[in-house]
Length: 315
Image 1 (tube, helix red, strand yellow):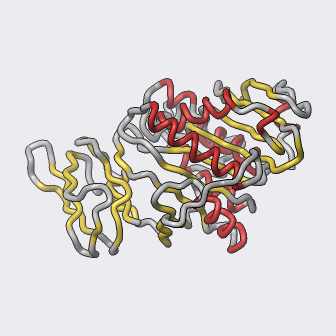
Image 2 (image 1 turned 60 degrees about the vertical axis):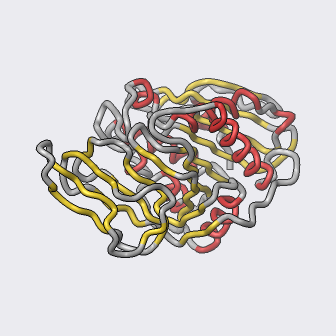
């Protein structure tokens, strides 16, 4: 597997033991994804890292930028391709979830379409790189309106072997929780369906970022690269990571105002109330109850809510 053909078509050098920067053009769109390619001093895996699939998730974007800036060929075995950020239009527009050209959630349209909308074409371009990777790391975090505890999602779509590789690497991130997913329209689902193991990490929230968050994220991904044999050193092990089989997401039935009744990392029993949506006169439109026992990993932090958007996620 190799990123060479795609990068060279975008005039990005791919010489051995070299670091190159440039832009990957998404055909048929004005989008150019900034990327850094690092060819290491020894053979090894081809690793694809993306940050900023969602434009309002700032710790992950800054982490991707710093990984690209600070890692050098002498640090690396194999190759690293880092895109930082993927969704430039959403980033510059300071949008949550959606792209400004088509109103689509980029992380719900994988593996994308070559002749689709702008978001679908971005997904398609990233997917071509996924297919050339030995491992895929997608960096996320709480968007402008989201609060969450750090956790990692891995895909079960690609079969048992790919899922187990993904699950074990997810533990090397060192975040408290690792949860499985059977979604096939997100970034890691697209990669797994193509036989490429990987994970989606979540850290940060509410449209903010801090040095502490970025340093934590950077160290976590660097440890994963050690685990994968892509950088020197022994990876730290995290025996206290809690593995969860799945994540249950509750979605809004109405536009209006959202009032959660549970907090992050609360232990929740099936049937417990987790929140309600009220109209602009303070009248209750709908109430929401836990569909399963579990732990609250994610909750919308904004007062505003729109129909169809996630409200909570219980692992």
